[in-house]
Image (cartoon, rainbow, N blue to C red; front, top):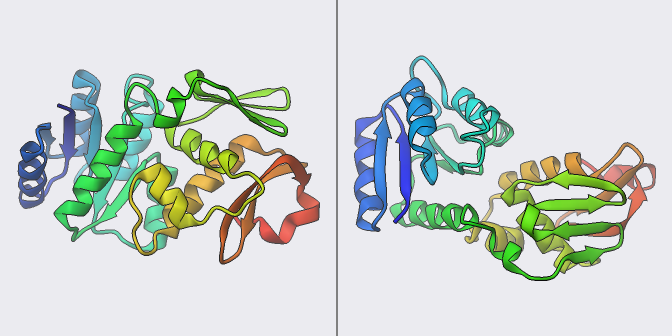
Length: 243
């Protein structure tokens, strides 16, 4: 049984989410605003947080940023559940630290799938981290037990989501991995079109891995992404690096 904190000021949404997650066996607590939500998150350390954006006093983007800046709450996965569905809203959500983003109105089965996927990734270790071997491709070595990547001589700490994305790309290095395959392998679901989710997380991963001189993730337009494990100079491939 997982402990889930719902932070939302809409009683009808809260009740809908609470009832359906409790039917799955989860223990659900509720906060009606961001300030109370932050306090409960720090006090109870839930396994997951479902967070609205448009709330009085403190909006969800700010709440998420504060969760990520607090070492005690930083590891808790956050699903943003909001009526704000524009691309820029999703980008802002992911940039503030959200792990996933679901737009209202939503279908209960989709909510359940996303909750399951986030809880799976937030377990004692990501699925791929249970692999006994250290995965190496070119200049990149993935260290599962520490959620780290070694790029040449640099040691880089990854989030669980970034770890899973890089693991997937490394397994298929030299090949193009579609956004659909990434969503299926990393998030555990495959909607018709959710490229915004992938784009933002790829951008974050690039920021961690790459330097001004070298890049490792190539965008294949209309196809997806490709890991270049030995790296290439950005100048040689600048037109393809849009994130």
